[in-house]
Amino acid sequence: MTIKRIAYSIFCVLLIFPGTINLQGQVRDFQSWWELELNKKISGRLELEGELEQRFKNNSLQYSRTLLTLGASYDLGDFLTLGGGVRSILLMNREQSLRSRYRSHLDLTANYDLSGVAFSLRTRLQYGFEDFLALPDFSLNSLVNRNRLKATYHIFGTKFDGFALVESFHGSGTGPRWITYALRYSAGARYSPSFRSRFSLRYILEDEFNLADPRQFHILVLGYAYNF
Image (cartoon, rainbow, N blue to C red; front, side):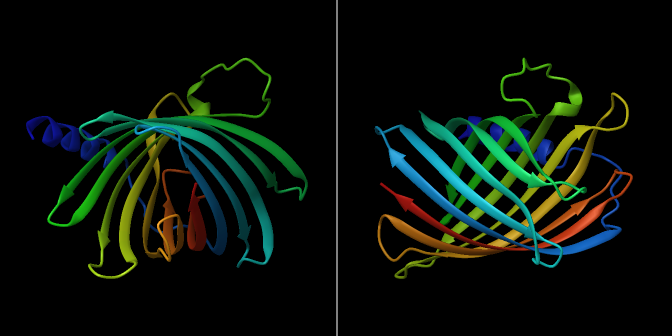
């Protein structure tokens, strides 16, 4: 119990890592995302994961990007899970041309149940690059730290779950200083018609700050997940 409390305290400190915060974005946009998630249990502790996302911007009228993520997670026992993966991104840039991007990530997640509510705290180290075959330079501008606190509650006797989360984004600024540059808040519901499949609907409010041109996003996300 003591180890769990220490781990959660560390995660909470990371989640609210300080920065001068201006929660009013200069540019606002309503977006819509569509997600398809496939999961395969390999053993009692190892799980393979795949996710396809389609995002639209400019009041959901313009194509933004397509994301394909492949990853795996391993249950370390007790309450910790180690995960990682790679992501391919096809996006529309400001010149209205398609560009490719790639990311890799490493996750450490702590899970804890309290009075019927499932809490999870995840810290993610994310590295972004443009050329898949290029050697990584691991510069600060390519590294992002994301910390997420999530709470999920299953409505007893039904097939519905409700959840809420807050996530912080940390990276380098114009100089070598490490800053907090975005906060993401989300709430939603999930419906599981069977043990293997699940539908989800959630709303995201994302605020940027400590940037030259901060933005604010209102996002509606519809998702479907299937477990093999």
